[in-house]
Length: 105
Image: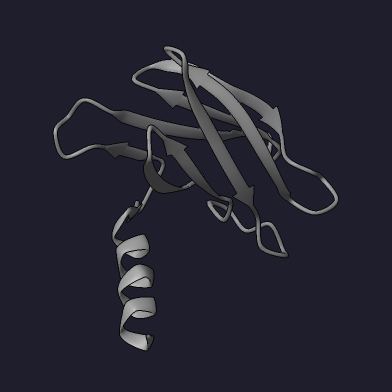
């Protein structure tokens, strides 16, 4: 039972591709995800050069969940900023077609 739970947990982690920075390109090169944070509150997410999310994170809490579409496919971004709002401290986990990446903005 414990082994099965561990296997599920490990397989879930394998789907998450951590990114150091604001750009990600899939291994096959077909998916590029880029993020920007403008004026400490405006989150912009691009997929293959197309802007798919342009929204504001909460100024009070420093977080937000956003939805967009890319060529009919759902795009989700879950963003958070730690207390103190350090430069390049906002992280957004972006999901496109089952591919999960974490961008640091």
